[in-house]
Amino acid sequence: MEITEIPVEGYERVVRAKDPASGLHALISVHDTTLGPALGGMRMWPYASEDDALTDVLRLSKGMTYKSAVAQTGLGGGKSVIIGNPKQIKSEALFLAMGRFVESLGGKYITAEDVNIGIPDLEICRRATSHVTGLSREDGGSGNPSPYTAYGVFLGVRAACGWRFGSDDLEGRTVAVQGVGAVGGALVERLVRAGAKVTIADIHEEKVQAMVDQLGVTACSLDDILGVECDVFAPCALGAVIRDESIDKLRCQIIAGAANNVLHEGRHGAELAKRGVLYAPDYVINAGGIINVSVEFREGGYDQDAALQKIERIPQALKEVWTLSDQDGVSPNVAADRLAEQILDEARRAKA
Ligand code: NAD
Image (tube, rainbow, N blue to C red; front, side):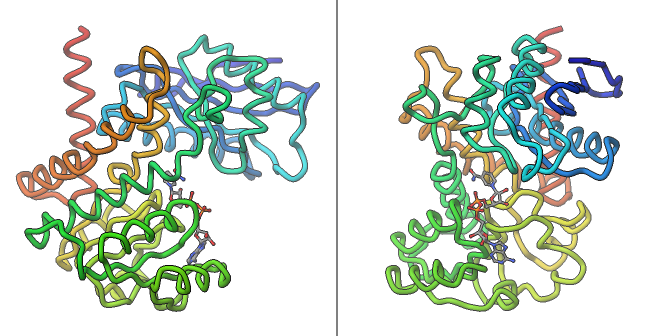
């Protein structure tokens, strides 16, 4: 396997692996390890070019640094991407080679699941490296992160209501949830139990119908969910839902959901603020999963109570972001980045 360094300013290490024997062509980006080893998922995608893959891995690894900093996971940020079509190139040899690639960074980068990568793939990698997280509980891992992400988002929705309406009681609050998959579905259950009136939409009609029957929620069409008149809109499906074409449809007071990259562009944060919509920045509110994984690194290994306690800090992190947003007169997404940078600067100064 040929491993080459790609110098990128502002990144600790970016490396490329090419292994003709297994067909592996992959990149790992270690953005920043000031706060700890760089944790971030492994993604497989049929990128059109290595440049596209590089852009993605750089953006994602920096995002992980910021997310972990604000969530106080004690971890840095990294990410890896395997270039190729998952339907065509997955093989035992490929994931063993990827494991060797991860191992070559000596623990500076720790991998986990991401788009098109499942636990079976990671289990193969783990035969070549110990720097793999998020495996099943039976394997000593922290297991499926989604219920923990959902718990954090639920607490974040409450915190946002507290900030906006002066009470975090969800009884009678109206919430529109876009996407009722692993995270959205668990969120809806919690919202209903807390007394909220919930409207949902999802591509999977059977899933929607089952929730309507079992939980008494209301269903609406995929097109209409954004425009539901409600207290909270919770995007739990796709990224970039808040964009020029959609923003004027919103009839909510708050946006607080699980989806990554909710804002199509950073400026949409300011557009939301202009319209009086309170935004809970995605990587702050959806950190429950990474917090759960990070607990694998505490002395004594994974412990669910420790994970829950750390997730219960998400409302505090959101309040810090909104306070900074008010103080600095910037939108919450900008304030979240500033908070992350402050935390990193302080840690760098303390280390120097
Ligand atoms: P998932 O695939 O289990 O669920 C997504 C759901 O959205 C599916 O049911 C899908 O049918 C639905 N969907 C897709 N397009 C839709 C559309 N146009 N309108 C309505 N519904 C649509 O994924 P998940 O694990 O629940 O993650 C949801 C979001 O949260 C993703 O953006 C993910 O990146 C983010 N996230 C997840 C976690 C986690 O722990 N799983 C952590 C952080 C962030």
